[in-house]
Length: 234
Image 1 (spheres, rainbow, N blue to C red):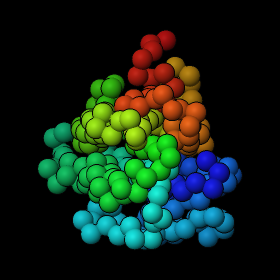
Image 2: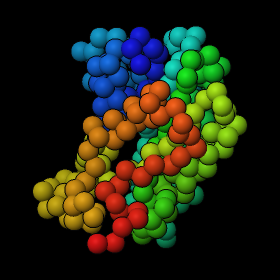
Image 3: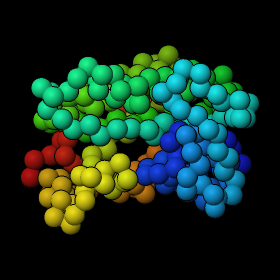
Image 4: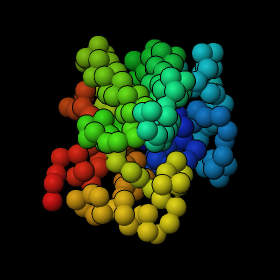
């Protein structure tokens, strides 16, 4: 990964920021596409590209001609009863989670296909595989992301690998409201067979593995990083 170009979309907080840190540590050249450059000021070998993935006129002119990997990290946590959800809220979750990824991949696919062993990592949620109340909107949007993962992996093989990570609740700024006290953290941890919540550094490490040549025989997969929640009953 050293001296190669990687794009991290939404790389200013949470898992995306951890990915930026780890990519810099292995000597990669990192480009971060986000609305602000928050938390990026002290990094060397990182360039910020201002952009909003919910807008159709996404500008990627600041990117190099060749990319070795893309990680699309923007997401949402919209936990409401189906009765209270409006169609506009489903649309908003689709914009952030699915259509934003579509816009980025449309805009960068030529650069990506020029890479030596290019790869894409997208993000889903455990709530797609494990039905949960109050997750209708986000699970629907992330379910679409999983479908996009498999379809693109087939269409872009053998040149570009495409995989998806489906975490459970992870300690990130996005989850602050849900994990706002020690009691809430403990309760959330106890729902998982491994009795802990997700760690952004661990999820980022998995994403880097999937982007790297060490994962050269892995594509079209949705990989659960969920403390066993989707598959185990203990």
